Length: 584
Image (cartoon, rainbow, N blue to C red; front, top):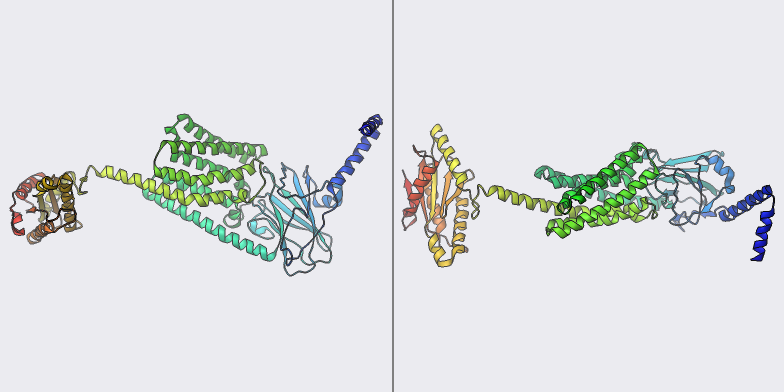
């Protein structure tokens, strides 16, 4: 320690210029020591090692001004502050330029070799190497370049390396990446593993986007058929997730908008944020937070409006600070989604709603990984690249089933409620509100056209006896059985209705003959006499039928029914012929 103090005292007593010069020399020596020697040569032999990760075999340097071209970088060489590339390293650039350098050698050439940046959404990447005449050979890829113009078109930026050479080849890789820290893994890979990897990717992504397309088509079809607000919101949410995945996975730039490099640059940042807004509004429709708290509902709308505004500002003036603010707001958005779902789960026992909430959970949890990468908390990984895709694949079918069955259940309840005014609740047949106008219309048409039709009125004569012997439920089963058998006898254009407690009517609206009407009445009596599991053993329906050929003046629909009900109730016991009364 005394020696250190003495050395520091000697350094401070030096003249100003000498002290500054010595400090610069020491700093240069320290930088050189940190930078270390140039990277070792990577021997490319697919038979020994078909894939070589760049960490541990390359060096990086960050050009803080972003002004140096390849000539200046190559000329300065080891004088620059090159550092070893480490696993899972993150490089916050913020307008700076990231350089990598490595040296590779392929003695034999059974396969071509490539360098692959394993993340889509990189703004621009350029690979340099000297050609035989000393000129620079340049390959360029990234969002700023249309995918068909890449040296190796695909989903991820990929460059071709020089084949068999006598001496090692030096490569420089220049990367521009704004807003989000660059952390994409880089690897050297031979031709066969690259082809296999891409085939597997295309197979899995094809199935994934096929699933999304199928769910979207089903949601759109149900939206059009049902005109349900929640189903329309779900279809919009699925569409937004699909666009986001096309942008983030690079499939959109590869197949959907290959020449729209302006949209490719924007979509990686814009699509996820707007998709989150659509998802928040859909969750608001699903969970109805206003039922728990008006302030929570207002907070949801405010965050949706704030996120949309920040996205529009970021499009107009793309700044790293604005995008980081969007990331903070998206974290708040996910928290609001979780609160809305928790309150809805606690408030409502609806099994369809709870299943939809459970279905949304994978997306909510896995969305945290790409968001954490956006906020600079973690490096690029499989979960940051594919977390949303995995969450959507788990979520979409469950949500579709839960929402569709829930909407169908609500529609069925509304239909039953609407039909209760015109349908008998016990038997499901039409009631007098439907039968009387139909009968009036049939009378008017038959009188005008000079045709005839028939009405059959059926009275269940032993209904009270069944109720006295076996109880009210047995009597109601007898009425349901009567209605079921009348449906079978009535034709497609005929109308069967319940007109009072134990009386039914069948309107044979199509032109018919007296003989056909009587035949139907006899068949009704015979059907009633058959045994049924709904009745007690030995019991049968005692049906009495009155038949009238119409029109008859001056009767209207209500008068016809009163006239025929009296005749049916006055029917006699005996064979079928005695139980059918033909009027007029």
